[in-house]
Each structure stands twice: as structure tokens, then as C-alpha cells.
Length: 389
Image (cartoon, rainbow, N blue to C red; front, top):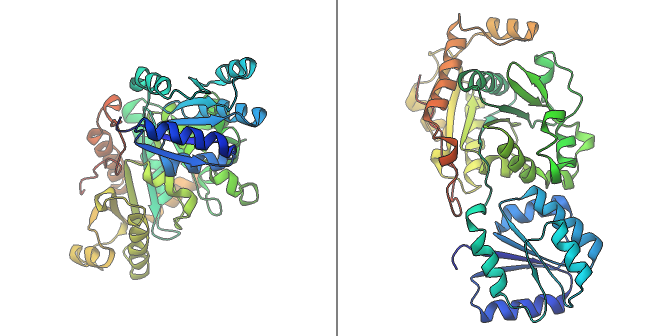
């Protein structure tokens, strides 16, 4: 019975007590109980923290419970959703099944039926069954050029693979990818968060297409609430179900709400310039990311605007804690010229060629999408290598 993590959600303490007794008698391995109905945002955090394979939702408040079942069924198809109640009411049971519950568990709470449904659907279940890969670009500090790296990687991956690529700008305060590319998006990340329960069908309407990449800009800070931040796991899951590649452009501060972006990334690239303050902040960002429980190899350092005269490679490793996996030259003229015209840096310059090679290395190091999702619980993301240029 290994791997069957059960989360019971019900404010009915009598019901949860009866279920816990039955589950204990059946030697169910892992059971957690939430005594309040969570909001969609809180549900996202629960899924991220508990990593359940089964969610059993009590029907003591039918209207709220049925909406929660419907939302769970649409948002987390890799999790088995079931309903439970202290009394057996045929119409309510039917409503729960119609809302997406795979099973109903009522008195006398014969948990073997829940076990049977889990076993029958095990091949379809998992802790996130997306087809896509996600990489995250994190600046050591503002102005390090992380967004430049992110947009060039996204466009190059789309061109090299011919696959669907989503570029997510998560920087609520300083995100300006749409401005740089001369785009006028109609929607932003807050719209995606609001539709997290059925987002798969909305991506095409929300994003702003550009050179084979779908861009979704950040939400204005005044539109984001703690509830919205709790929906980030659902947004990521939907994005990775819909797109073969997701490139996340993150802000310099590793806010708590962005932890799911980092923990679900297959590669995290920390972009830093070769000056002492930026290197100091890069070390701080590296330690913050490591505290999320990720292995050190999950983070790769990208040294941007390198002139080759300030620090030796061993100095970089000593200052940041990891060596530079890739270096990019300083070319303000090419970058500024590209942004003025709303285009990419061309491959006629060294920076353009190295950014293209960066993307090519990522694509070539990636496993086939259907093999990229491991069964069971992932202790840390698989890392997409970025060989030194």
C-alpha cells in the first residue's frame, strides 16, 4: 500500500473520526485530515505540502463540497478524488459522482472499495502528470539580464523543437517582457490564477503569441492576493499539461509563493553579473533555493556580461558556492538595440550565438517528454544540464 497518501477534508469531526478508525484498522499507510474546507488557493498549498494521491472530501456542506470536488477533478487529474458522508443520500451521492468524484465512501465505510478504485486507476495517477518541462530563470539581483536570457531561451527552444513553449513572467513589480517585445497583452497571470480550476482550455485565449512563444505577463501587484498565490501550483500543473516547455522568468526575491515554481522546475538557472555585490546576492539566492530542499545540482550559475578580467573561475565558485556553468559576454549595444526594435539579439554577435547554443544544449540534454515524469514522489527536480560554453 506504499504511496497511497490520503487527505481527508471535512469539518464533520464525527465523520473524520470514524474514517480514521476504519483506515487504521485497514493499516492505511499515510492519512492526513483537514478539518476545514479550503479555498482554491489554500487547496493549492495543501496539494503542494501534502502531496496526496487520494483526496476524500466530506459532503456535510454539499454546495461547497461539490464545487471543491469539481475544482479538484479539473485541476489535479493526477489525484484520485472521492466523496464521503456520514449518511447515505442517493441524490447527493449522484451529484458527487457527476462533479467528478471517482468513488463514494459512506457508512459502514468499507475502505477496501476506495483501495480498489485506487488500484484500478493507478496507471493514470501520480503527483502531477504533465507532459512538459519547466525551467526557471532567477536573477541574483535586478538588472542582471535574467529576463534577456529567459526570452531568448524560450524563443530558441520553440524554433529548435517546433513544440509549444510558454513564457511566464512572474515578476509582479518589475516584469517588463511584454514592453520589451512591444506587445500589448490583454490578460495576465491573475487571469490564469482566477481560472485555475479549468485552465487547460483557456491558455490559448489568455496568452500573447510572439515568434512561436506564448507569453503571459505578470499581474499588477494590486490584483494579487494571498489566495491567488496559493493557486500557483495549479497554474504550473496546467501549464505543463498544455505545453511541452515552460520558461519561468522569476523576480530576484524568492517569495514564499514562488516555491512551487522552483520545486517543479527541471532546471534552475541563477543569472549573475561579475561584480562583487551581484555575486554576494547570488550566494544569498543560492542558499534560499537550497533551503527549499533542492539538491545543490538543481541550480546552475549563469555568469552574464563577463569581461574576463575581474574574477577567476575559482573566485566565482568561492563567492557564490557553485561554479559558473555558463558565461555570456557583455554586449549592451546588441541587447539595447534589440529591445528598442522589439526583437531578439541576432546570431551575428557572440552573445546571440551563445544564447542559441545555450538553448540547443538544453534541448539536447532533455529526455523525451514521455520519460521525464518519474513515478512516485520526486525528492528533487531532474536537472537539465547547461555545459560550459
